[in-house]
Image 1 (spheres, rainbow, N blue to C red):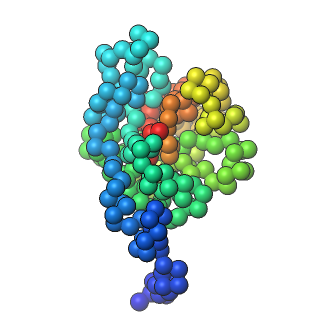
Image 2: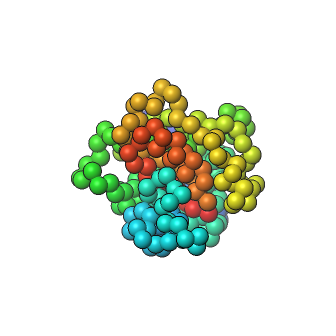
Image 3: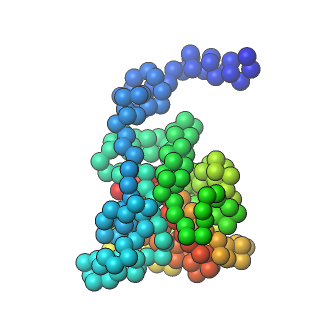
Length: 248
């Protein structure tokens, strides 16, 4: 029996795990609460939200303003794991991941991301295996916000996701500080983020022709991931697939 295993056993005895939702002594999430989490079984068009098996935009569907669904978007696909606003268990999980960084929750999320990606990712140039043209990139955080938060959790997810699937990780984006998106209305969010996210100069040539898996925890209006995708496409990225834990 290894020393590490013994230490873990002792810690479990001294500090038994409790479900973050119902506080039952079992694990970070008990079986009953875990079963209440509903992973999305199909994806939708990121704009009009019509059912779309792999989360791509409708080809002929027009939105309310008469534009094609994909017309104002720069990413090509959106893969989600959960819907955020209807699940209090999920909210508690994400809050604990962001502010307490429980390792077991991180591992749980990575497994979900991997399963959804393997099920729904689609690229017309890739067949059975992932190759070196696929790069995992996190949604960036401004220096000011990073000082307040301590960690960029999208980056943590992206690093662990890339490691698990043996893909290249690249912290390719940076952003200027703007007002917190969560405090703004939908229309203000779009304006607030304009020209605020950029590709780091040292990665511009590296990204040429690549397929990027853009990782975020929660998307709402998709304005942040769209601004990221705009910067990536301006650096001649071939395709951007947004992979997120949930949509609010």
